[in-house]
Image 1 (cartoon, rainbow, N blue to C red):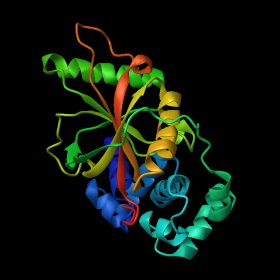
Image 2: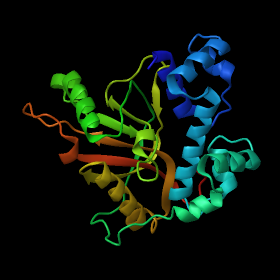
Image 3: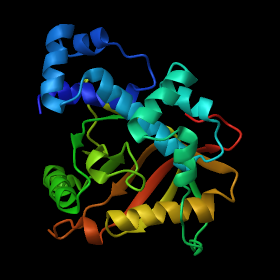
Length: 270
């Protein structure tokens, strides 16, 4: 993909709550609005406006799943929509049902088995990272993390897998996911991925993407729901420590710390 379009998609993924204009996005990569629109559509098969709307709608859909009691108007505003009417019309066009119907059909089905550990909370700083986009496919994840493992070399840096979309409520092929070295900050703010700071809950996961999805849903049901905390954002990340002794990383067998952004339940979604 054209690096200018990849850069724009990163901007959309991290700033979709803002009223981003075509002129602003084009200026960010040094193109006129006309040429930017043409190149973006050729690369993604969508207009910039349609792509941004899809990001906002997928974010709203995720919030409806993980925050079943949040008012739809709040979800609309938190997802970057200017009004409830625009949100309702756009949502119905994309999902072929109303937001209320979607929420009722997506009630989480989780195991009754509780996790054998207490809620672990961590306050983390914001970080600007140099990231690489990676499909949510176990073979692609193994290859991407092995490249990071080689780059890390003797430093034995940890890697981060950043989930902009959750794999348990939409097709994996549409999920935006990035990988990065933990100690590899991006000096160019226009190309950096901003991993927000704040309060995160940590859980330990072993296994493939299906195991990750099941683990997060069980964690929400058994640990977060009974607690004073709730999920604050669709964005989450996993921290991976590479094996030593020259052993190659295998995502399917790896044990990772997963960090989910949380808030006290009386606080607004961010």
